Image (cartoon, rainbow, N blue to C red):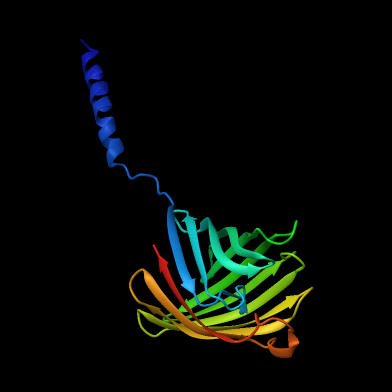
Length: 236
């Protein structure tokens, strides 16, 4: 008879265990986000990657529950070394250090069906330092490639950017940067424009891109020429 209270206690514990498990908070999980867009010119570091023609792009990103770690694929249309599509895979870390947001990433890019037997891919490493004070945000960027696609060898890009949120839906931004290349043109590039949040998931960006390497300095190409670019993007 002395075992009966113990047996009843064990039975009650067994019956209560599933209910306790349901009440416990599940372990935090990461999540996927997606984006896609169209633009009148594909600009990277103020230089056209599509020879001034319209371009489309899409990306997916998986972020950890705290948002610190992320990775994902991306695809965009280009005109480079005979290829019309570029795919990439990126992974990174977004810590906060002394009140600054830091974004460190490594990205590998491939040109699909490029007119070359090898060297159709390249690594690109990026470090961003970001600080926001009210509606104003400043960003410093450093990018480096040890060996670029095709005949392009190592290059480094330094950039400073600033943005101002005029309203919850309208922001103004601009930046200036310098690119140093082992094989290619060294130049300074800049942009200025505005981004309008049309809806919660749709944004319109319009800006002017330009460099000091246009004209006779780069014979036979217009990728460095100044151009007004409009883009429409959605994120979900």
